[in-house]
Image (cartoon, rainbow, N blue to C red):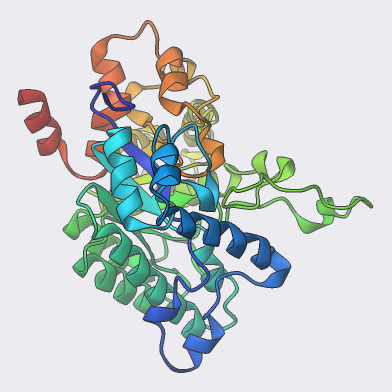
Length: 392
């Protein structure tokens, strides 16, 4: 019996825990030296590499490996998580978990992109990371690779997205902040959105790039900075957590106001690991804003749907396991929310399935199936897959 106990579940958020040389095999020339190591000493590189070495040693110890596979969701997380960076282990972990699909995001490998000083560095790092992630996900069809395409340069973003999609990427991620020095709704990005729509590839906004928006001056509180969540991937702290949804709200508002969702009605996407308790009120505020400003704003007058209707059509969200997803559904719509494990990050908790099932108690099978399976299928342009599974 798997962790899912026969329930068909798609996992909308999982991760790799990159090794020190994760990018190196995919780099050339000056970039090979620049990004040869993912972790610096300042980032706790020595501590991290020790954990990676411990996980690698487990591979040749059948007893330790069997013990780790007894219950991966409750066991060690982060770099010590079963299948955090080892492809064979991840396949075994998926067999135990029982997820039908698992959307796989990078973790610390994004640092090389976000720290880049030039576009050449940025896109070289993105190319290496996308190749590394795809290589990991090619190990099993259940592993769905999320590529990263920086939007700083519209043409290069388009080229990187096309490269990744042609090699198997199932989704394309970018920062939830401004697209370089432009709105994501700037006409320069129309070819990018057209590509995603035509190829039926969803976009992803995820905790990390662009989401930790707490202004630096607020961090100047005269005290030492608190430790982060040990073993997690985002260096997340309490003040960051309370700001996670600001950037996605700004990004999605721009996508509505600038007419992207109207011009590309087939576009779909996900807002991942940024919580979802804020979504019902966000939808209300979008429509409230439309009623307040549409009499004088020609761009609002040109919209063919209410703002909240674009979100319901195009975007899906992953609540945190400790959020009350049942309340969100009652306060908005059941098609908006999806299951996620965050495996092997500790933020996903030791029993995300159980927590979400408890929150959904009282809802009928159809609503529960939407949360655990078919809302993901919709986001991934796979309604036909949902129908096929149901028929079986």
